[in-house]
Length: 68
Image (cartoon, rainbow, N blue to C red; front, side, top):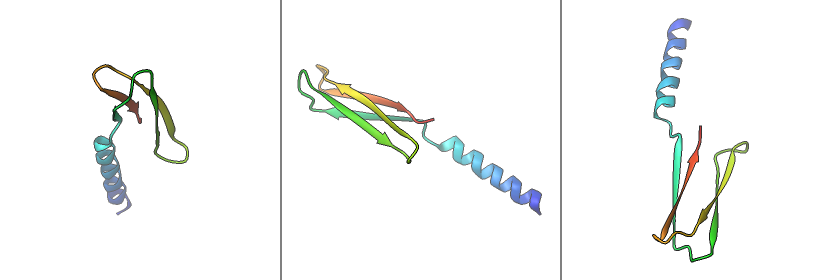
C-alpha cells in the first residue's frame, strides 16, 4: 500500500513539474524616450527578481524572466 501511494505521489509531482511555467515575459508599452521602467516579480519570500525595461522605438519593451 505504501508503494502505491508513493508511486502516485511521484507521478503527480512529475506531471506538475512538466506543466510548470519556467519562463515569464512582461511587455511594457508607453515608455517615453530616455525613460525606463523597473519590473519586479516576486514568487515567494525567497524569490524576487528585478529587470529594467528600456525605451524602444517600436513602442513596446519586453522583459524575460527565468523562473526555474
